[in-house]
Length: 157
Image 1 (cartoon, rainbow, N blue to C red):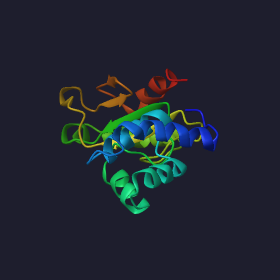
Image 2: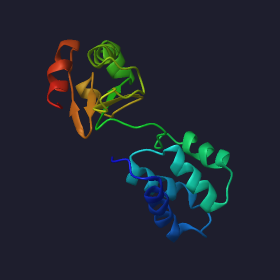
Image 3: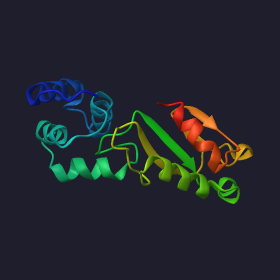
């Protein structure tokens, strides 16, 4: 995710918008494509979307903040999802979550200062038989203990 000059950003956003410009219901796919391009929905990008679609900024932000798939802040290269489902909770997922927060010095739904990790507690990862479960990017780690977290995180240096 490289920050580019404002003129370049505006041109890229316009290029993304162009195929959708006059289509009803185009805001969500535009936001998805823009986020894919820039990693998150930056304020300057949201301004271009608002202006080009001729919609109020409040409408664009309303959609972006309603759906969990959209992010208004930079995200880490690796997303850590800690399951908080019933099976994981009963088997100690809160201790796992606390250890991740302590190890990375990051809060829930926050990104580390070095942009390496974003921590997202989730309702369920669908791997109850492996509880407690953590997923980092697309890799699932099960039957975890708080002591097992640091060696896993170290793999993502």
